[in-house]
Length: 105
Image (cartoon, rainbow, N blue to C red; front, side):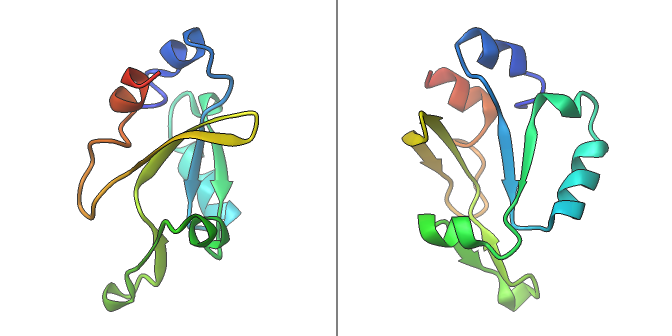
């Protein structure tokens, strides 16, 4: 959704869109390379889940052999400060969607 709506985000003054994942840089590059217009978003590899742990956004999926992962979330930042943070409940996809984030700008 963020790729498809990237022009609308830009129109509202959003300079960059990032996708963070608890994966290594190689997985992120491969994932992005499989998307058309992948140059419209930037990938961030949080391989050790350091960022999500600091933010309290980590989730333990060890019971499913996946280890520490990230909760689904979206945030809006301005000058390196988080302005809005949208965190989903487990198995939910409402508040971190591109449409919802766009509606909050």
